[in-house]
Amino acid sequence: MASIKAAVWSLLSGGFVYLYMTNHFIKANWVALIWIVLFALQTTISATKKKALPIAGNADKKTIYKEIISCCNSNLTA
Image (tube, rainbow, N blue to C red; front, side, top):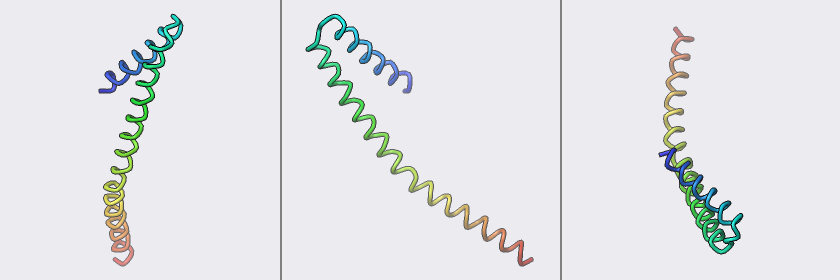
């Protein structure tokens, strides 16, 4: 999946530079617009996934910390 993303970004970037340097400004602007929309979409999806994941991770961490503390407390009292 990462190689597909890299290929898409490379083609969009290379296409934009090529079109801009060959004075195809209108086409270059469309490529730039597509690039901006895809970047915003990818950033939004990535941020949403990262925001949802730590909630489950924190629950697991809390459980682990409680187990460690209870284990340490039991060792101290024994």
